[in-house]
Length: 476
Image 1: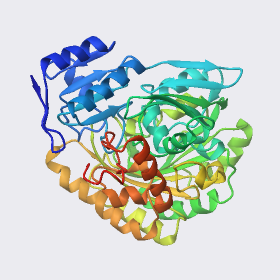
Image 2 (image 1 turned 60 degrees about the vertical axis):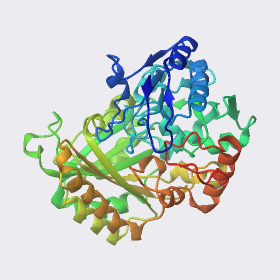
Image 3 (image 1 turned 180 degrees about the horizontal axis):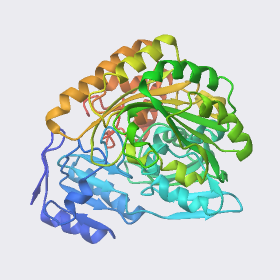
Image 4 (image 1 turned 60 degrees about the horizontal axis):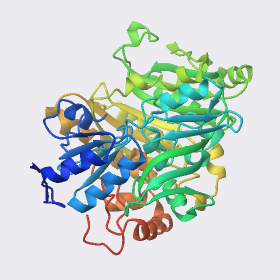
């Protein structure tokens, strides 16, 4: 008998039930002790060491439906894994069932209609590789190892968002398994209420098994990064604030304050030094893009400059080495309406107190196409936010947990008075119900609660940044 014990579920999984599940699904069923169990339970954030009682590596929709029914019957805590790449480590659980969608890797492209139908285990790098063979893309994240499912359900910001909008603005339909085991195809024409909530509501309303995206012509981009010594951060941020006030929507930028990685494109004298970097992605005419980014290349000039024409897939993976799997990660984040003098001061001061050379502070610039979609159209509430600032602590030694987490929390406390809300995909561990509400604002949050009441009144899907159903106040 496989035992599971959690605060919310104390039942056991008997051998007969497990054998019945094995017979009912096409994918693998892994129990503790299986030679692939530890690999299957390991996710991107090395802080997370959860041990599910059972892992179902789903081969398709039928496996997801069977797994949901099994979890409900056994009274098990249920977690869902797509790419497994999120700050809060919510793609795992202790003692319950992990529904692992990562084997579901199907990608079907329609080049004439510029559509991509994508299963929930696909990573953005995998999707971009297929789409770019046809000169197509849609808004993905800033890191190629991010899962398509998690990024999309939270809203989806990335290198193309100022030009093409959020990922959810390019989402045409979602297939989802609900808490009662139904398989629904949601779009603007079918189950419109659920489709609204799936676009930004996280994993609260069901298990998304596939997505249909509108693709766009995206070929070579003007991309890359430029680096300066951190002592120039204050003057560079002031210049950057003026620079982005006049850039076209084709250009998306990210500022990073970090320790120079031992990368081949950085001179050795910048390895291990505090740096400030600006990343750019201009998805338009190459000659025009080179002119648009010229002021950045001329400021200083940079200590290292790897900005230029490159394939979109190359640009999309440039930040991957900065956020590798397996490190211990802790994040706090805020939206900002403006980059004020006080905001720049806090960014520079707290980045200068960074306690780990693996940590990174980012300032992502939005608006553009993101802000031109009506706020009520989707469950992503902060359409007009200009920036998201993240304080991402990263380290390797568990004995140093409190030191690095405190740095991120103190940084956040200083930024909070200057901010509004938070992007749900940038929320960290243990944020609490008030912070979840802040991710949506009262109007959107209350509308999501109504959907939770309709589609998951028992709060089966609660290993997430949870929106609790109003009629199940005792379910946690």
